[in-house]
Image (cartoon, rainbow, N blue to C red; front, side, top):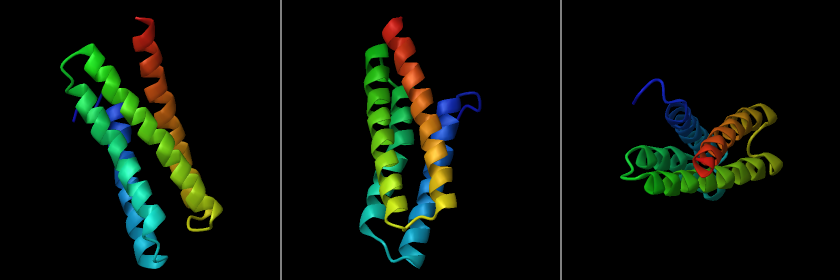
Length: 117
C-alpha cells in the first residue's frame, strides 16, 4: 500500500477499527446482527477503494469509488443505529463517526474532481 494515498490508508485503518469494534460487540455485548452489517459495509469501503485504484479505466475507477461512497453512507447508518440503541457508547461511536465522515468527505471530493474534469 502506498503511504501517500490518503484514502487508501484511511479506509484500511477504518476497516481495522471496524473489525475490532465487531469483535468487541460480539464478545461483550453478544450482538451479532447489527454488528455483522457494520462489519460488511465498513470493510467494503477499503476493498472498493483498492479495486478502484486497480481499475482499468477512469470510468471503472469512478464506478468503484461510487460503490465505496455508498458503503460509507451505509456504514454511517449502522454506526448511528448502534449508538442510538446503546450498543456503542458515546466515545466509541463518536470516534467511528468522525472517521466515516472524513472518508465520506475525501471520497466525495475525489468524485467531484472526476466529474468536473
